[in-house]
Image (cartoon, rainbow, N blue to C red; front, side, top):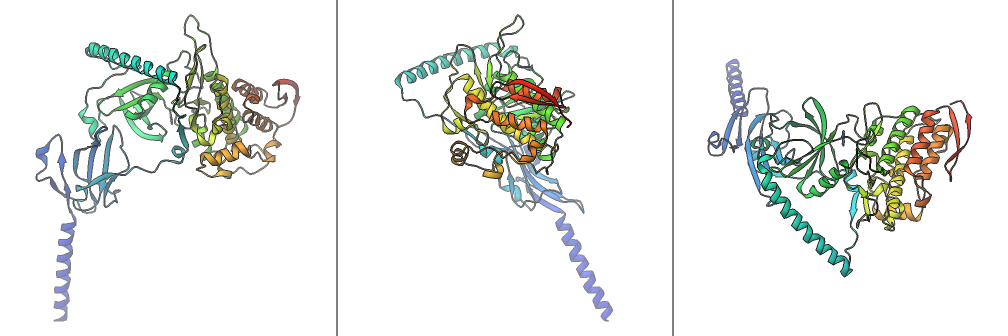
Amino acid sequence: MWNFFILLVFCCCLGAMSRANLEQSKLQCACFNATAPESCTNNKITCDVEAGKVGSCFVVWSSDNVTGENRVSLQGCFINESCNNTECVSDGPTRNNVNYCCCRGNMCNSKFKYVPLPPSPEELEEVVIPAPPSDKPSENLVIVIVACCAVVIVLVSLGGVFFYRNRKTAMFNEVPTNEPDISSSSLTLNSPRPIHLIEQKARGRFGAVWRAQFKSDEVAVKIFPLQDKDSWQSEQEIFKLPRMKHLNILEYIGVEKHSETNEFWLITAYHSLGSLCDYLKAHTVSWSELCKIAESMARGLTHLHEEFPATKADGLKPAVAHRDFKSKNVLLKADLTACIADFGLALIFEPGKPCGETHGQVGTRRYMAPEVLEGAINFTRDAFLRIDVYACGLVLWELVSRCTEHDGAVPDYTLPFETELGIHPSVEEMQENVVTKKMRPRIPDHWRSHSGLNAICDTMEECWDHDAEARLSSSCVMERISQHTRYPTTQLFIESNTDTLIKNRTVSM
Ligand code: ADE
C-alpha cells in the first residue's frame, strides 16, 4: 500500500516537473521586424527553446541624431547563453549608430533603453577649455565677415555637390556620400560596404577606433559622430599635408562619409600592438627596445615639427604642433618602432600666416606643460612645439619606468604623476603641483646606474624644463637618443646647454 502511494507521489512530481520543463522551454518576447512586419503577430513571438539551451529576448534600434527618436528595426528572441540581464539595456551604439540590447525573461524586451558607459579615465582627463570670447569689436567684425564668407562657400559647395552628384565614385581620399544602406541598421556583418568593422579597439576624445577589414588588409577606422565632424575634417587636413607620409607618422589611407548614419570615418593603417601606453602596461622593455621606441617616436615628432620647403614634387610641408602628445597617441608597429597618431587637435603653422588659434588650454591635463596649465602661452609656433616636447619628456619617463636595464625592481606601469596625483587629477591639482611646486615625475637613483638610461633621464629633464625656452627641440631629443642607438657601448658626455658632443668614452654596459 505504502509502495503504491510513494509511486503515485513520484509520478505526480515527475509530471509536474516535465510540465515545468515544457513551460521553461517557451519564451515570449516582443516582436518587430521593420523589413518584414508580417512576421510578427500582435507584436509578440513565442519561441521554443531546446532543452539545455538558454533563450533571450533582444532589440536592435537606432536613434535619430537630431530628434533623439528611437527607431526599432528588430525585436525578437534568440539562443544566447551569455545574456544575463533582466532589463534590455544598451551601453552605447555598437556601430553605425545602431543600439543592441538583450535580456532574459518573458517580454523583457518590450522596454529598452540606452545607458552610456561611464567615460574612461583617459576621456576624463581630456579637456578642451576654450579661451573666453573676445570682446574687441574689430575681432567680432572679422568673425562676422568670416562667417558670411563661410556661408557663401558652403552654398557654392552644395551647388557643386548637387551638380556632380551623378558622377560620384566611391574611392578613397574622396568623400563618398553612401546611399541609405538598409543592412547597416541590422547587426549582420554581410554589409555591401568594402570596409568591415570587426572590433572596437579604443575610445578617445572623438569617437571610437575600430579594427576593420579592407579587402585582405587590416585597417583602423576612427569613427567620428556628427558633432565631431570638424575634428574629422581637421585631422584629415593634417594627414593630407605634403610629406606627411613618414615611417613614424601613422599612415593615412582615406576617409568616408556615411550620411545614413551621420558618421565620419578616418581610415588609417592598423597596428596590432596598439598604443605605447597599452604596451607598457603589459610589457617591460629592454635597453635596445627602449632605444628603438624612443628614437622612432622622437623622429616622428621631429618630422611633424619640421617645416620643409616646397620641391618640384611636393608643396611646402608646414610645421605642425600635435598638442595632445602622450603615450596613448604613440602607436607601436610590429617591429617595435613607433608612429605618432591622433592629429585631432594639431595646429598647422603656414609661414607668414598667424596660427589663428584662440583655444590655448587643450590636450590631456596630465601631460600639460606648466605654461598651458597657467594659461600663459604665447601663440607662436615655437611655443606650441615646446609644449609637445614637454609631453615627450613625460613619455620618455614612462618608457624608462618600464625598462629592465638597471639595478632596481621594475614597478607596474603608472601614468606620469599617477603615484603623486592619482588617476584623475583636476586642473587645479595639476596647476598647484606642476606650476607652483614645479613637480615632475620622480627619477629614482638606480635608473642612473646605467649610463644610457642616465643620458635618457638627463634628456627627459631637459624636455620638461619649467622654462619652455630652455627645453630641447624634438630634433635634439632624436639626436641624443640616436647617438645611443648608434654607439650602444659608448657613454656620451653632452654639454647640456649647447647640446654639443664634447667627449666620448667607451664603457662596459
Ligand atoms: N588605436 C588607435 N589607433 C590605432 C591604430 N591605427 N591601430 C591600432 N590601434 C589603434
